[in-house]
Amino acid sequence: MRILHTADWHLGRQFHGVPLDEDHESVLSQVETAIAAHVPDVLVIAGDIFDRATPPQSALSRFGDFVRRVGRDGGPAIVLIAGNHDSAAQIGMMGVLADAERSLVRGPLDAEERPLILSDEHGLVAISALPFSYEFAARACYGSDDISCPADVLREQVGSARRHVPDGARWVVVAHAFVEGAATSDGERPLTRAVGGIETVPSSVFEGADYVALGHLHRPQAVGAEHVRYSGSPLAFGFDEEGHEKSMTLVDLAGDGSVTTTLIPFVPRRRIRTLRGRLVELLAAPGGSNDLIGILLTDEARQIDPMKRIRELYPNAVQLAYERDVSTGEQRLRDGRAALESPKEMVAQFVGFVREKGISEAESALVAEKLAALAPAGEDA
Image 1 (cartoon, rainbow, N blue to C red):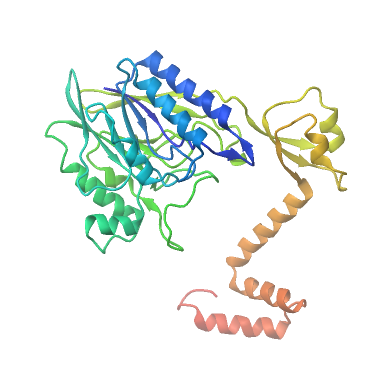
Image 2 (spheres, rainbow, N blue to C red; image 1 turned 90 degrees about the vertical axis):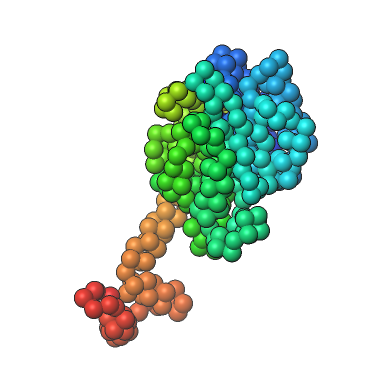
């Protein structure tokens, strides 16, 4: 069984105010090219199809046109789930008129997570599609007040799905989650609404699955085990993703349940780049670019209307900062983190900030005495 695993398309998203419509059109075209070249049996979209619960009409139309083209002339079966950016109800409605033997569309939770059953020359393959859900909805669906975090939600979903896997069938799970140990990016929205809540889930929750197709995190990666994988997003959505290679994952599921994965790279229509230098140097550089650009100026003095001048060469320059300001901010952050590791230093900084005068030796001694009284036996304050 051959599976093309994708996720986190975020149709309708902008990059610092710059529309990504044409970039997404290029991405969808590359998915179609991969389908034609590799002929997968199943296309998986593991959540965050859209960037928000009420996507623009252009995003809805783009996705609808894509599905019609892919489904034409006996294309691959399609499995898709709602992610935390999607409207579960909207995604669920997409499955109302779909061919139940060739697609599985999951938006809201269902207490009975029934899989899509496919077959190949080796036998049956069950694909369980587990949409993202917050804890309150899961408590109502499963009738349990003990669900208090994303891991509890996913355990209920996996437990329900496992009950419906036919004996002897290979099992594929599609989910949208933050698995422990995975590398993150700045553009991912937290998966819990509880302040200080734990949003990660252990990879062991998927025990028994032969392949786990994950969405949510934007970096392609395996986590916990080689068969538990994020395909990552097809586009970079933040400057922290500059230089990251984006890809979709081609999965070959053998008769014994083992998997072989191949990364098929996406070629971005526009790259995300940061340019560093003095303004006069950047303006004197040959040519220009349509890439999405961040500017880091090394000038000591403030320049006159630098962004307007930069955009004559780089029309998609979206961010500008001075290196000295960034360096100062980073140093303050490092100082703050260091202070947190030393309670005495943190108190000293607080006192100095409040009254604009440093802490005295007598006050410092008093702080040390009180902290020592609070510290557990054998530990330094």
